[in-house]
Image 1 (spheres, rainbow, N blue to C red):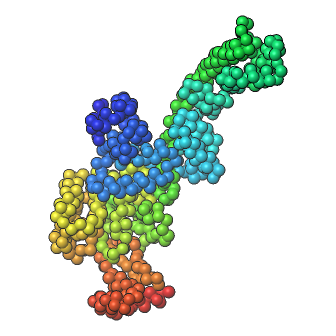
Image 2 (spheres, one colour):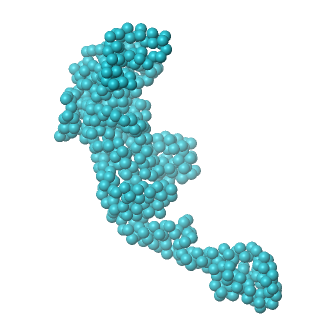
Image 3 (spheres, rainbow, N blue to C red):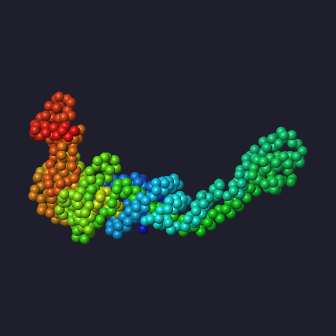
Length: 594
């Protein structure tokens, strides 16, 4: 396959990759999702990631039908990346895309959950040892040596369940031998400390080289000791060399020239001969030792390659499992066939959970034919007074700051994670894999261009006829209320006609009547003010109930917090508009609750 045939690879990018990697290596890097190889070749990391997403999961990326859906996808990946155990795993997570095969989704879920179960049973010391091994793996840029050492650390931790089984089948003796050989060799050379005899020869050579560079100083030192006679000088020089270096007496004597004209010629000739002999000895010994280590590596080649592949794959699944454990994620149930659903019980928004906010209220919500496959959602929600009906489309109404947008984001996160084959942040969830995810956040830009571009992005997926999930937030923010109500009614009707799943957040519920009978209206309600005058909201939607905005709560808080007299008078005028009695009762209830 020519490089230009990959998405995002034009002539300039091709030239960069070919110059740095060559066409064959560049294609292999793209096919294997190797972000590091492309970025080290000169591509910006973000561009490399986008190319690889399309190359390895282009069909899955088609699921993300709007820019907001793509933004939500990247936000989810960023949260998962935070739990990566290696940089290589982080890069692989960044190029994960929605999957198009139920089998692929189930396979990844099996691997991630099995890894999580195995990880959760490990003692703290063993977990720390594994993470430390992966940290060293990163420090050594994922080299073979680092991979083998990480495999040995996993074996030491005695992890043998799920994907860790691939490590358990490796031969420890072969890995230990390979680790020793890899530690001894670097770029075809033998490292210091790998062989005592080689170290002795190298040290001797280094000392002799230093002496040769300072031969006149050596002669002067010997003469200053009163040595004058030729025989005494030869003996003194021999003793000096033996005392200063790790060479043998035979090596020194063999190097002494027989026809030296004077002391300078004698010392220089001896040291030159000694250097030549030691250099040859070093080379011979290094060649012998390197061949022994390379033979060991060749014998252990299968074990090393298995360790490299296993450590890399486990790093990915362990990273995904750590994410799932951190957010208490569970396995979603997939709904196929004629049934379609996106249903969650006690779902939590990942962004809020990542901020560590306390007292986050989980939410239960459902679209479509939930409570199938044994009633996973119905069983998990048995403690609720009511469950929604099986309408596929809902209009969500309610108070400002009531969590409507957060609910849309949560549903979006659940669907994205499920279709990527990952556990979801809910006590229970049922998901129909969809062909198009239309997520539209509230955009307060009131002009014809924004309206047109929005309609161009959210209507075609509905018209195409595939399974579509519509998550649309305050569509009325981009056009005048009258037209917005008409257009929103049309979107709800089109969603029903096309048998899509959808939630439409709006403050125009009354203007949408009558809705198609297949759609329902849900509401979120504010319940008053806390003693600190914070808005109290029940974030759990009430099904088939219109939620109401609560301006009296906001006005009450503003009036109570006003310190400037003129400012307070202004808020009192607004209080009269919404009802003085309501405002006073709200403030009284807040004080009484204290």
